[in-house]
Amino acid sequence: MFPSSNFSFSASSLFSAYASLSGFLMLVRSMFHDFIPENLRSYITKLLERFFTPKSKKVTMVIEEYMAYKRNQVFDAAEMYLRNRIGPETARLRVGKLPKQKHFTISVEKGEELLDTFENCEMRWTYVESENEKENEVKCYYELTFEKKLRDKVINSYLSHVIAESEKIKRSLRVVKLYSKDVYSRKDDDGMARGNWGCINLEHPSTFDTLAMDPDAKKKIIDDLERFLKRREFYKRVGKAWKRGYLLYGPPGTGKSSLIAAMANYLKFDVFDLDLSSIYDNGSLKRILLSTTNRSILVIEDIDCSSEVIDREAESDSEDGYAYAKVTLSGILNFIDGLWSSFGDERIIVFTTNHKERLDPALLRPGRMDVHINMSYCTGLAFRTLVTTYLGLDGLNHPLCEEIEKLIDSTEVTPAELAEELMQDDDTDIVLRGVVSFVEKRKVERSKIKELEDAMCKVIDDDYVVDDDDIHNYGSRNGSNKKKGKGRGRGKGKGKGKGN
Ligand SMILES: Nc1ncnc2c1ncn2[C@@H]1O[C@H](COP(=O)(O)OP(=O)(O)OP(=O)(O)O)[C@@H](O)[C@H]1O
Image: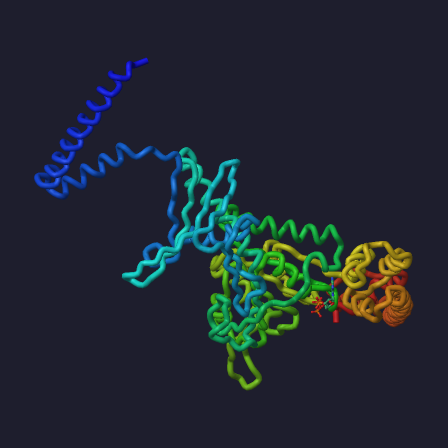
């Protein structure tokens, strides 16, 4: 220990040393100000500041709303992405909704912080609004703070992850549009198509969950769509346009339109409904197709009914002797796999028909329409989906369901007819009994028609197979020299029908 006299000596000498040091520093400071030019002074100050400020282990990135007067993609992505990161700890939120929006838009209020984790690393986001009073404008930006060692990870992977996730969220919130030339196009349509396409929101409630279809066939369609979406690079590599063509065929009321709506709702793709009868010629067709957007489904319904496109080489001669231009099948095929097919990306083209056999073989040639989907009569398995959708019953929970499934499998009845029956009453028992009697009645009708058809075939057979001369004539009428015997008359009768 120091003796007390020593201590008082040291304290007073320390005090005087401090006083002379302060005097000296003040002298240096005033000399620094008086003799050193301002530029050099600020340089030295900054150097000293850097030297004495403790080093931070964190880095902060500033993500501004605008870059060179354009919206910053990272800012918009962050705004969308962070909506899903808002937790109960966030104290202040902004909420809003435009009249056309289905959902509320929720975002953080200025100064609020959000925490995110990416590959076990912590990312801290802060939303900032700074007011510039001079220019009377508000600058909005996000600050992203993380540990210095994560810099490369953030630049190389985290920001891309934020953008990819935001795209997914945007897609899920997207309201699907139905475009048509028959809808008046208004300025306030927030659709993207050009030309005279008018649009409304596609409110069709059909989804793959409500679609009554064989489960395996349904799964194949969903897998095909998923594969298509992921194949941007594949299409580029093999030199094909990023497009997929579907031909849906089957009797009326089997769900062709419902399947298109389910595809659109699943992919969040807009639908362009093209009525060929309203299009004047191939040139207008070209202009109309070029004004459709990416990530869309182009639908041409009842392609067999468009008389102009049935005959590929159809000439446009009219009765009055003048030649009128019109839409031809080759005009359409040019967009499916010709030179014009390479416009746009992520396009789906759907043709529907009730009569596949009437289509021009050019349309059915391999590689033209990538997928042919037979929308046929309802099956027992598909009926289960209708029961779930319309009655809220889970599959086979009702004793009558098994019987109905067997009945349905043994006759021809469309999902539309069954859906109609399932809406007849609120009482499940009454409804299902109604379905039983409806399908039984249909079964009887069908077998009567079958009997009638068989009888007619027999009559035709008996009419034609008379003697050898007749057989000879028949053969030559059909371009065949084969001699056919009486016993094979039925096949012949059918042959004649076709020949005519
Ligand atoms: N497979 C199905 N699954 C669920 N509902 C269906 C199905 N098929 C038909 N429906 C019901 O029947 C109605 C008519 O069906 P939809 O218009 O999809 O048939 P379509 O095959 O396109 O008929 P068309 O050939 O006459 O255009 C639908 O709105 C739906 O309620």
